Length: 427
Image (tube, rainbow, N blue to C red; front, side, top):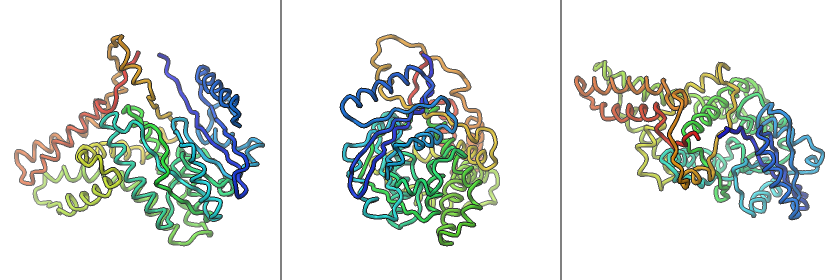
């Protein structure tokens, strides 16, 4: 089967003057597969035949990827008549009353520039990897965004399932493609202009998690590399901004970017996968319990608060997040030093009903895969290091770290050979 590269964000433009007077839908399609284009255009015509005001826009290049498509979409004359814009990626399924529940926040609060809704995942129970992703998102929404919104602090736009005030978007300079996190870039610039954001937890928009490990790695690379690269490009701009308080500038630079987007990844990997394992070789070094048990336990409990139904998976989640910290750390340094894959944009593949079709097919398929696609050398190397540390601690140590080290080594091996997530055989 020919692989397709699809980038088809769906946007909903809404015109308001105190009340809804007209709405229109704009579908932005910069996919490269003619078959996909034909299907999308056919679907748009079907909705248009039902009386829906819908515009189908395509472009002949993929420059700037999603941000480029968004920027091109905003140039049309009919968009200038709109005062609000709701944005959805192609796999998002908003409820019919989405606008009725979000727009009032903007209409009655002129200082608010963005209303962000929560994501709800239709395939969270598909495999262990999707369950662990749901746990991570639970922390992101419940702790980072809901608390940030309640405290009137800055939080980032998630790139979809949100409604922007058009004036806030334009005042911030619109969409830019200087990094792979155009959503965060826009939110930071709007925040520096004094606009406030609101997160509404009880408005949920259904969407799909990446369920193949390859897709998840590509997504995490973009989400770790992009913020680090944006920090490199905006740190001075934030520091010299005269429209916001020193406290907000400090929060953006130190808390939002430096701690959460850079240090969190690096410290997780260096401390728990390098430094602590290495202490088994030096008995004179005593790692305090607050650093190995108490603080990590508190952080873990905060993370699982957002998805209590998956509490039984907390050990697997810790091990998996530690493994992914290696990948995120690598991506963070690529973003900071603008090297290698810094501006690489790979569409996050979503399986949709494809997996069900494959499962329901009676034809037997032979499993084929390329070694480079499933075997990850760095993860295997770290797994060997942890295995050796565990063996040494078991044989000569007294800390009993080997219990953790063996489990963590196993997690690195499992990920190193790509044996996590849903495996879709090549046809």
